[in-house]
Length: 101
Image 1: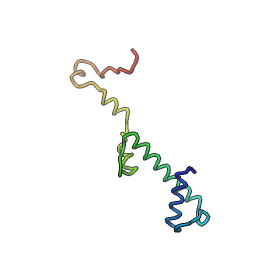
Image 2: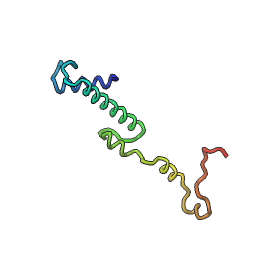
Image 3: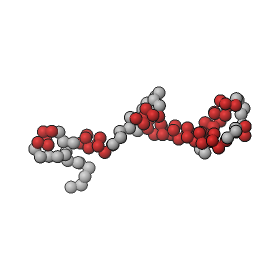
Image 4: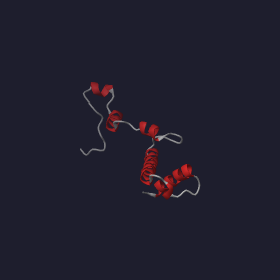
């Protein structure tokens, strides 16, 4: 269990059992640890998504995840696809400058 999960566990114990609650007072410490670790993982995932430009202040992890493109390869291909005028001339795609020729 990492430090963030320990903080969540302590917050949940205080919320349920009151101030000064000790982990020994929890009926199912294993399940409490699982929930705390899950919350810490979700926070880390949300931080990663925000760092990559998805979501923002006030958005939930679900909203941020929905902003991630489902097929990144297709999105990139669409960005570099040749316009219709070039396709009429027989050019299928724009040249890819990052490939060696």
